[in-house]
Amino acid sequence: MLAHEKLERLLDRFDTIERSMTHNSDPETFVRLSREYAELDPVVSKIRELVAKESELADLRQMAGDAASDADMREMAEAEIPELIEAVAALTAEVQVLLLPKDVADEKSAILELRAGTGGDEAALFAGDLFRMYQRFAESRGWKVDILSISDGDAGGFKEIIAEIKGKGVFAKLKFESGVHRVQRVPQTESGGRIHTSAATVAVLPEATDVDIEINPEDIRIDTMRASGAGGQHVNTTDSAVRITHIPTGIVVLQSEKSQHQNRARGMLILRARLFDMERQKADDERAEARRGQVGSGDRSERIRTYNFPQGRVTDHRINLTLYKLDQILQGEGLDEIVDALISDHQASVLAADDGQD
Image (cartoon, rainbow, N blue to C red; front, side):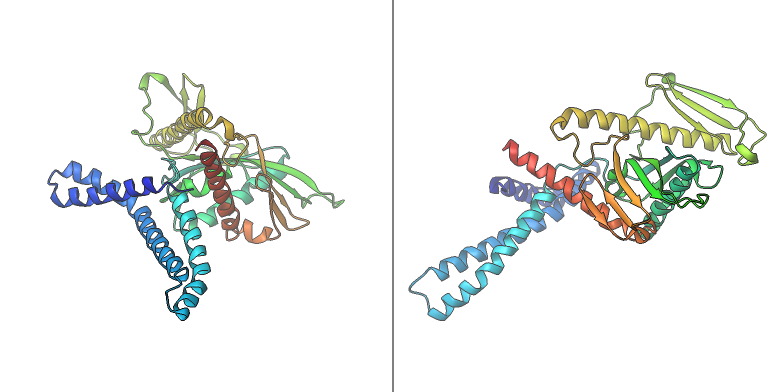
């Protein structure tokens, strides 16, 4: 249930910000107030809509229960009440979602890491399929995809690929993709028509800035080496490859493209994202231990989804959602349905937990 006192406090705060912005001449304060105003504006608009509908519903109920009112007016009021009750319930749910604690990383761009798991060449091919799925999904939203690191599979696909996906709200959309993705299909090299099971691991990390995570220069060791690649791919005869080691955590990032300067910059980008993610995971564990196992637990070893080619289906095991549109999902266009269902399930679990604490 929504506490109307809380809604009133929000409305009062919004009015105070509006007045302060009108009369404030300090640029720094104005920027801070503007940011808070922009965050509250959609919430306040929805709250005002809810308050108006509740008031309208109260008036209709009073009219319908007033024996002295005109009979036709009472009948009209009674006919309109059910529709208004539904509208109030829908608006209440929307406001509840808008009032959920915000993940500070939600609006950020993201680092996508894909690694072939069990299954050899077939796992690398599947990792390639998944990367193309996310690439198309990103491009359909106008997000920019920049490959940071790549290790090709022997028969195609990728042993590992790391990419930066730039855009507003990328992490919010893709954060529940982290985990083990499993594929069941007949490999092209399989003459007997037997179904093989392979897997790939996906990690989606919020892109971090210097403000989000400060790295002490004394905590990192940077080694340069001669780059090389299997089968003549990505071979570089200069000492351009860079390995960055974060000594306190043991995290190692290897970049082996042509430019040593670019390798350092991209390596630090990946390292910063991994350290930021580690801090967020630790905070989540401490804050939400009771919700472990729910969507967004962040367990990278958890099998989250199966792509079954013979049956043309995709099943997300966390929310027991099965869709018979594998082709559309791998094309990126059908992924929205899974992503939105995961976000809704997460919101519902947070709301349920909050209700239990009231």
